[in-house]
Length: 264
Ligand code: DX5
Ligand code: ZN
Image 1: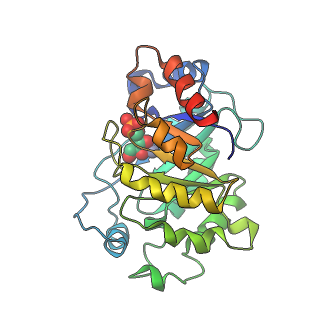
Image 2: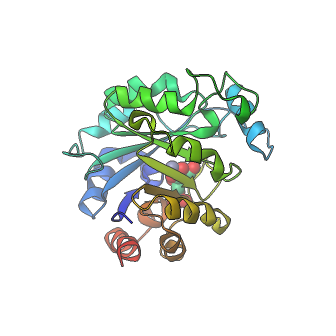
C-alpha cells in the first residue's frame, strides 16, 4: 500500500488562531491539512442510501456549519503549497455539503488541492435512488471530471450508511479523468469532531484495499493512538485525526505514532 499520509483535521484547532495553528501542525510533522467544510441543515434521520440522497437533494447534509472559501484562502498563505500531487502541504477539503458541484471553482481559487465530495450528494437534483443515477451531468464521474478540469485532485467520500459497493463502478471507469484520486471511508457520522470510532466501517477499507493496492484510502473520525492499528491493518493509509492531534499534549508524538502504525 502507499505510504502514510497524516492529515490533521483543523476542525479541532483554535479557530481564533487558525493560521498559526495550521503552520504549527505542519511543523509538528503533518503531511496534509484536512479542512472540513460543513454547511447546512438538520438531518431528518433515515438510514439508507436513498434517504441520505433525498436529504442532500433537499439541501440537508449534516447539522453543523464550519467555514467557507474566504477562510481557506486566508489560511492557505500560512502553509507552503505542495510542489507535487499528494505532496506535503496538500489542502484536503472534505466537503460536507449538499451541492458539491457548486463550490469547486470557488475552493480551487481559495487554494484547495484535493476536493473530496460525498457520494450521497453527487447527484442531488437528479435521482430518487442510486439506480437512477445515470444522468451524465450529475453523476459522480461527471463531478470528478469537472474537478479534474479545474486542475485539482478529486476525492469521493462515503457515509457509514452507504455501502462500499456503490464505488466499484466509479473506480473501474476506464476514463482516467473520471476516476477519483482518493476514497474517504467515514468512520463516524460526519458533522462533528471528537466522536467515537466506528470499527464497523473497516470491512469497507479492507475490500477497497484488496481490490486497489495503490489507492489512497482515507479514514476520518475517531482516529487516534487507540484506534489507528485497526485502521492501518484494514489498509487505510491517509489518516485524518482532529481531537487526537489538537487535543494532545505532544501533537508531534501523536502524528509520529499514527505514521508508524501505517508504515510498519
Ligand atoms: C467529522 C469530520 C472530521 C473530524 C474528525 O465530520 O469529517 O474530519 O474533524 O474529528 P476527530 O478526529 O476528533 O474524530
Ligand atoms: Zn473530515
